[in-house]
Structure formats: structure tokens, C-alpha cells
Image 1 (cartoon, rainbow, N blue to C red):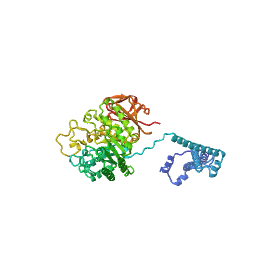
Image 2 (image 1 turned 135 degrees about the horizontal axis):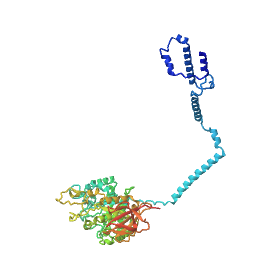
Image 3 (image 1 turned 30 degrees about the vertical axis):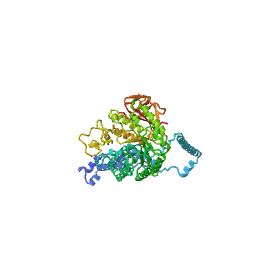
Image 4 (image 1 turned 90 degrees about the horizontal axis):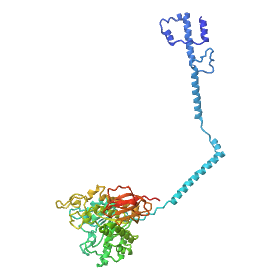
Length: 595
């Protein structure tokens, strides 16, 4: 029975014996006996044989399938139901993937010899030549296009050489005793001027005119010393400090050297013989102050001078001290009101670098408001024509008390500022004009000198001298009040001054008038090459007006660059065919050049 059972098991499937059953066999005390008892018992032998067969079968399952494995169905074969076939397939797939990865890793591309062989084929040679030709054709095409653009593009004009007095406005302190008092004696002085140098720099001007301030007893030619500072203004050392302070602010200082400024009649009058001694004094004084470091000499009341050679000699002295951008200027101030008379002497010589006059004062005082636009156009066009290639200077006398005190006083002042700072030439501004300085209504000035108003303290900050009680009136015409106000005259002046110093059309631009169709409106165009261009439209009437501006170089619409009316929105586009201006409003419009 035992033998037949064993044969039956060897030839067929191995019966599965539960693992728990085997453990019971090993651990159950009742199932255990002596080894000899087990071996001697037929039933025990049979159980042991079955256990060995099961363990052998389990060991066989753990063996990998290979070529030496017995075929299925033969003794020792595992058959198809033991899951070995699935394991074999997974391992083969992994081996194949590893072989493929190994093959890819070992691939190194073509060798040098193989590449050279392929590159030498006719097809690749033709391809390379085609690509090379295309590259050079493209490069040459781009080069030709760039050359065409450069040749056809309009060329920029060469910028004219300009000296410092042509690059912006000049601030005049002709009455030094009214600017700033430093020692409480009631008179402005050099030390006070030094205290205000930061303020002058903030105005964006290029220089300042001081004086006269040399020693000059009234109508006393012999007692006049052109090389000595009048002690009421300070000392020579204090003047030198002014020069150093101005230099740190990049400001130039022009000294007014009009010899007999204390006299009612100028020395250059026809009735006074300009003798050789006076000429020598003037030459020595001009050279003295140029050596001290002033950037220019201004002479007033020269309209009656008949000898052009004298002016030429004086100007030659200034040219001897020119160096780089620190050119010395020779300025002439005339009181004539007609352009022919103003330029009569200068047309015979180049005896001045810039000429100033009160020429435009007549325009301000003209009572015919309805025609002020036409009057302004006529005055300015005649002046520019008479000046020719000579450099002009522009200034306007302060508004009188009546005009300044009226509601139109400040708008007109703004309009005049816009006029001066947009014309071709150098604008000159007297101290206080930048804030609308004037005598207060009902409060006539204590002296003929108008004092600068700095703040709301005693004497408006001009001096610490004692003042009568309740003499300080409320006013916004002070530097302190207007400095923090974006709508003030002072802020407007600074904006104009900055534009005048940086815009090329205002620095070098050509001037041409534009037609408005109204006698109270004056308009003109400033153009320089391909830079931003400006149209200035000034309404001298105290009422609103609508005009149509006509000029062949103007577009239909232009942007607002600046207006005398603080309420006017900047950069808004306005149609020139129907342009409305407020009472006494000046507009500065701009447009970009289009080829």
C-alpha cells in the first residue's frame, strides 16, 4: 500500500498539504513519539514521505526554468498551474529592455571618417553652397536696406554754437539795496544777496546782473572809483564771496559798470565830452573786474555814444578773458524805444554780445486792449528784422500799480513772462517779477526802490530793521507763499524758465508768425529741425475769445504744453480751427515733428 501510494504520487500531481497541518505534526505532543516509534510505524512513514514530497515540490517551484528542466508532464515537471510561466515571461521582458538600453548607451554616432564620407557626397555639397549663398544674400540685403534708410532719412541740422547767455534767462538785481538787507540798516547789500543764492538758482536762470555798486558820489566824476565797491553795499571781499557762491550754483555774474549811475544825466550824453582819461578809466575797470572773475560787463545809457570804436575796444577786452564755456559777455542797455535807434550804433560794429532795452514797455502800457495783439506782433517783428543776425535781449518794465492791482494784473504778468521766454533771444527778468511784486494798494513804497518780499515776517523778510505797528498787510505776493503753490506765478515762471533752457526749438528755433484773425491775439511758431515744435498764442484782451490759427506747418490739433491759466489741463489736445482762450490767457502748444 505504501509502495503503490508512493508510485501514484511520483507519477501524478503532488497533493497539497496545509502548512498548518505540518506545524501541528511538529508541535503537537500527542503526535510526537520516539524516533524509533515513528520509523517503525507504517502510518508514520507514509506521513513523512508525503512531507518530503511536498517540500521537494516547494523547492522545485523556487528554481528558475531553463533548458535542463524536465518537460511538462514528466516526473519533476512543475506543470502549468504553479505560476512559474508568468514569472519567466516578466524576467525575459526585463532582460530584453536591459539589452536595448545597453545598445543605445553604446551608440556613439558616426565616426569622423564616416562623417567626411557623407559630407563629400554631391547632395550635401550642393546644400551647403545653397545655404551659404542664402546667408550672404540676406546679410547684403540688410546692409543695403540700412544704407538706404540712412541716405533717405532727413539729416539733422548742426547745432549752432551758443554761449551761456544764449541758453536761458538772466535775473537782474539792478537795485541791490532793495533785494536783501543783512545788517538791519534798511538797505540791501552783498551779504544779503549771498544769503539768497539758493533761491536764484531755483529759478533755472543762467546768470544774474548785479549793480552798479562801485563808488560814485552823485555827479562827481573825479570822486568816482570804478574799481571800488561802495561801502553801503559791502566790500570787495564780499563781492568775491558772491562770485564763489554763484560758481557753486553754476551761475554767471554780470557786473553793471555804468559809470555815473547816481547822476540824473549819464556821462555818455552828447553834452559830455568822453575824454581820454575817462576812456582809460573804463578800460582799466573792465579789465580789473574781468580778472576778479565776472562773466560779463554791462553798460547802460550808451545810446548817445557816437564813437563805435570805443565800444569795440571795450568788447575786445572781454574776449581776451574767454575760456571754454566761461565766455565773457559785453552787454549794452539802451533807453531808446525805436528799433532803428536801438541798433543804429551796433549796426556799425560788433561792440556788444547782447543788447537789452525797455523797447516792449510801450506794448504793456498801450491803452488799446482790443488791438494789443497786432501791436505786439508789429513791435516784435520789426525788432527781430532790425537785429538781423545780432543776438537780442527782451525785458518788460514792471506793471504799474493800477494794472497790477486790478483783477487782470496777474494774468497779464503771466502772459508777458510767456512772451519773453518763448521769443528768440535772451529773456531778462527784474527781481520780484517772478512773483508779481508790486506796491500794495493804498500803501505807496517808502522809497523809490521796490523791496523784495520774501515771507510774512517783519518787512516781508527783507530786513530786520524796526517797523511801525500794523504796517504789514496781508498778501500772497511773497516767495514763501508761492513756493508751495503749484498754481502760483512763481511756479509758472520756473516751468517757463526750465522749458527755455532745454527745448531746442526755443533755444535755436526759427521764428514765424501765425494768423489768428483777431487783433487782440498774437501767435507765432518756434521750430528747430526735427525736434518738438511750439506754437504760442497770446490773448491780450480781458475777455474770452475763440480764434482759428492758420499756418502751413501746423497740424489740425496740438497738445497743451503750458498755459497762463492754472486751471487749464495740460497735454489735452486742442483743435486749432476753433481755439478758445480765456481772458488774458497765453497758451503754449506743442506737436511732434513727422517726416
